[in-house]
Image 1 (cartoon, protein in one colour):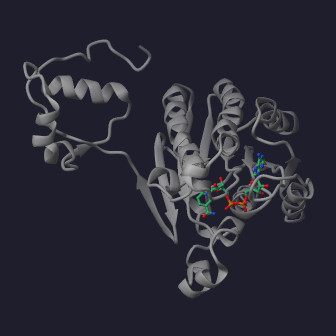
Image 2: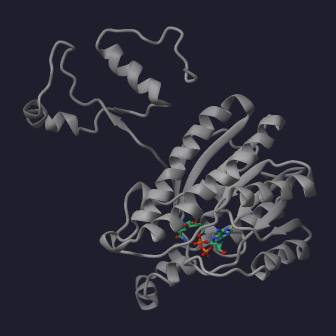
Length: 316
Ligand SMILES: NC(=O)c1ccc[n+]([C@@H]2O[C@H](COP(=O)([O-])OP(=O)(O)OC[C@H]3O[C@@H](n4cnc5c(N)ncnc54)[C@H](O)[C@@H]3O)[C@@H](O)[C@H]2O)c1
């Protein structure tokens, strides 16, 4: 059984919905858990410390160890305070589940800069504010696991969610870099793109529609928990990846790079050439999945007969 004996986890947004279930499972498996939750509405208004307190009580009642944190993830001080709560209470920090989130639906041409900023502040800025101090603790320990909760809305698109989709896609970029910079320090980072029945679903989709489609049972939030727990655990060796958890189907989500159209070096392509070769430009077979920006560059110049790889590293 995967266990978190002697390990410490932070789960943000752990007072409700999916975050609560992640916190309960980690605690059940032996982790000491920082249950962070601001306790506001789905749209990000207000605060309520009871929300985190109730989950802490639930964990303690079941014999587990947990402490509450009520700060918002949307400031550097908030992120730092959450990490400090872990270190001060439990002496270390092994796993961070960056899950806190808000949601609303606004047409792109009606979205105000304030609405845009609020969404990015919680999801994307919050991910950074939390992960940077956590990374420093993990680097000293030589061990750490990050799980950023992203969304298919960011990866694949979702109407009325320009702010949400951009923030969630941004977390994949953040996770990629943490994975690269953490690799030498035992730090792994992945994202999860969940589908889980919560108030984010009930307050957005009409309840009759949900009932009629039978979706409530299909996307039970407990079905997301196993992959989050696995990625947060010692057993996980995956890093720099994204995983979708949808209705009991667990799958890797990746960005592939097509072979494309590559005329020789002497050829200066025009827009008309792009038009003429667009089928090849947009082709998806064959494809590769570069591990970083240099792998793409080296591969293309390699196809052109140039070898740039000697001595070049990801740090340059
Ligand atoms: N439910 C889904 O199908 C789904 C799909 C894709 C992504 N997600 C993501 O999963 C995560 C959890 O969503 P959920 O469905 O459980 O929603 P939820 O609203 O039930 O839970 C989110 C929790 O985050 C807390 N929170 C919000 N802003 C915060 C802040 N600034 N600081 C600290 N806590 C804050 C809220 O108080 C709430 O308890 C979110 O990041 C969401 O975007 C959910």
